Length: 416
Image (cartoon, rainbow, N blue to C red; front, side, top):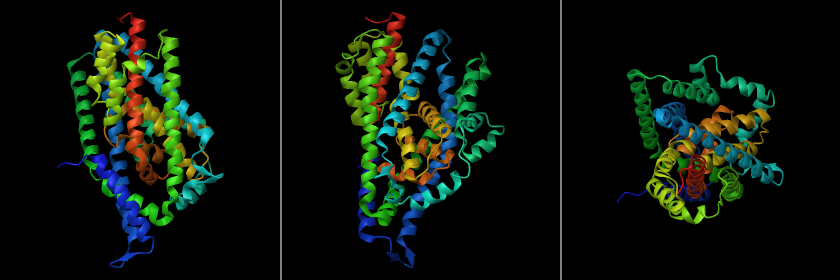
């Protein structure tokens, strides 16, 4: 019987915690310290995520944009949908930054929580690196246009790679030729290939997560759970504020309709998204709810809800932003305004580009951490409560799609 990946990861988390707690940091097997074994397993997994991050982001962004603009008859509606996606995702990121600034989950009694999560060595190293010259907003803007694309890929300059990918995808939509169509199809094929490759690496997630959790618990005991619980509460609070406050307000202002009936109308789709943690798996139910229960036309409803799983991941962007800020704060690194802006923009860009597959958020967070000079191995500790948070943010993604569909349909006069 095949066991789903999230259950295997959950078992790995429990086993890693038990082994690390019972064994401690001084156990030696065949002359090798078990702490080194745990660290090697975790490092291999993180390295695999780093390896696929750049090609996955680049091909996914190009494929998404080029595929979005291929139907010229829908360009006006499509542009409005894309603008809504960007605005709602940006709003989600702003909510994340605001709630994070109020809660400060990376601090325990005013002290960085990195020591509790075995990030103390990385914290000291990063403080030494970043105090010598924190990047300004101007530096962050300059990074968007790298003079050497290959050097940007080697250095993990994610903003520059995303910007270049957006330009390529947009340019493909402006060329009307058979060659352009074939090139677009090639990028779609490359994107799907990288998705499959990432899925293969994610099959190793239980082994990597076991190593990361065992290493963390062996060094710091169970003290790491406190900061992680506060981090999870921050994510859930941000998602709730966004879904129950900001999105209904947007529907009220942009569509000029009562937003609250949208919740019971979308209930079947939201429950499906929450239980499966997959926007794609709930797509059929989402389209049915939007068209039959909300009253959006088939033309608008089908377009918006079908594009949602590929382009509109507002809840995911919110989660990625909180995760990166949490790791930085836990490591005792005070990000400059420019770095916080870049982190927010990278969360927005990666969330709209990467397909909704298990582990895609981990890949995106790894890439953002590396781009900001933060320890990518810290992504392992975030996986402890990732399944629950994934269920929550997926439901928010689907609800954001429904809000966008209602707004577009109302503006186009295509509601029943």
